[in-house]
Image (cartoon, rainbow, N blue to C red; front, side, top):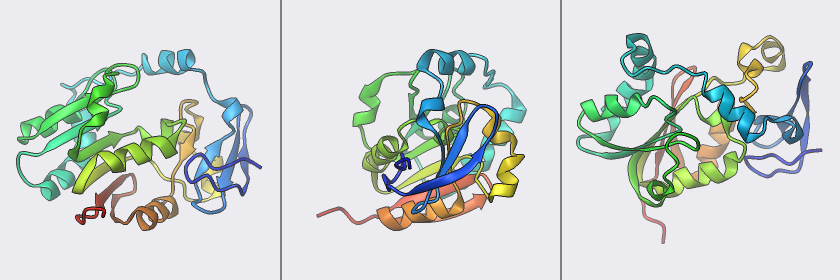
Length: 216
């Protein structure tokens, strides 16, 4: 039995298996995750990411990102400070938020690895098609929550697990850099545990807001 990489619960069960990988599901937060021994190493992972062609001038890509950018911008107010986490080699959402009047820092493990930005506080953090790649989702999630100012927003895009039957034919799992798969129940667990407001905007767009009360 494998410990959950998100909530550290010690009870997980076999969920699915294909020709290359085994998947398990946490019995507490319902995260589905790949056996850690079957993940890519960093050089293989980087080589896969280098194939991505996210062009900031691509109107289709901007339209895709607008599905999180628009509802987030409607909620955060004017002239805010944000972080685009996992922005990749062609940052685009950050430009869209800057066009809306916000200041945005960039962080990406491979392409913008300046960890100084991770010691700052932000009004909003975005992570689009990022969370499913995380080998240590527990650490990164805690980073995000700690970096958010009281009342700050977290804007995520990731496709979510529905059930085993849908998972068995789900193209999303076939990307071997995708190693953790969240469901609505997973986000509901995190929102309850961390006292976050949760909104499901679309099937792959999730907004969470940190409590505006300072910890005492």
